[in-house]
Length: 370
Image (cartoon, rainbow, N blue to C red; front, side, top):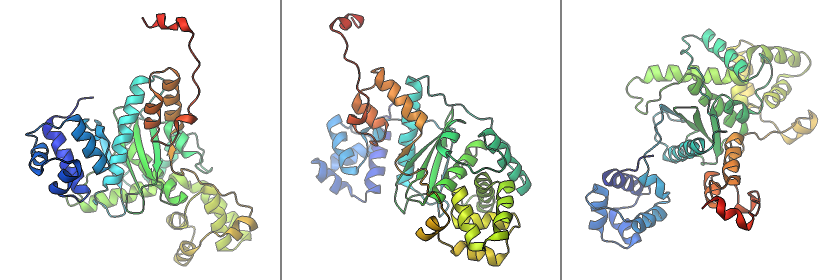
């Protein structure tokens, strides 16, 4: 991967400094250089030494490689936020690191196959959204009724590697990159499990439609909002297939009250109440009054006992795609990467002590390397 030149490195230093709310004087003092020297670094007229860059990275909470390496050459990128168009540096940096790591591991390990799906045409109506959702469920090995379980594994089989980190309440829900082969999605693990699953389904939608994301929503705000609404419906249809949901809802409301039916279905399909009520409404299965009521429902500990529910916490942070973890272990066992590098690629979710013990080589093995 190509390294950045002095001007690009300087821009990244300035970007990270401003993001941390530091002045040039404050950063220069922290790394014990003159402010004028830092100003020249940021303008690209003075080269940064390795020691200086290391000190800058520590103060600004960044990795050295972020300052010197070219960003991944993603085909398209997307960020799913509460406030469309709002920057989310936290998730962007995590996504960039995930893409770097995936590209590195894929180059070194042929066993990490990042298959790409044939991009699907954009749905132009709700009927087409539903049709696409059924087709993608079939691609994932799901029938038209069953819950979408084991999401991380299933999406990885179509080339989308999911990474889940607790990024806090102020970060975006999710973000994704469509790489030359496959794609990467980062999910904010601070969300509740139902929202995490919805966020991954949403990013899968952008992945299968090879959808381009624009941070500047001022250009065509209404068009983007309409498209995001269709992606949202696509995500709900993936998690709550019309056939399975409608049939199960009718079965339950025949013998249970609305609250009980909602609690049981939300548990079975692992969705939040807002997603469930929205989906039932768009399928015409409930009234507006029931919609408002279901949104207010909260599953309690008593419900878990009374209805014999099995609590699940899928995509709990830190969660890495299993195929990605397996590739790193292969590289480590082959001694292509060191223990420290393996832990770094695993986003520090493993300790070196958890890595497998490598066999001791016989004394004459050195001749194999000479």
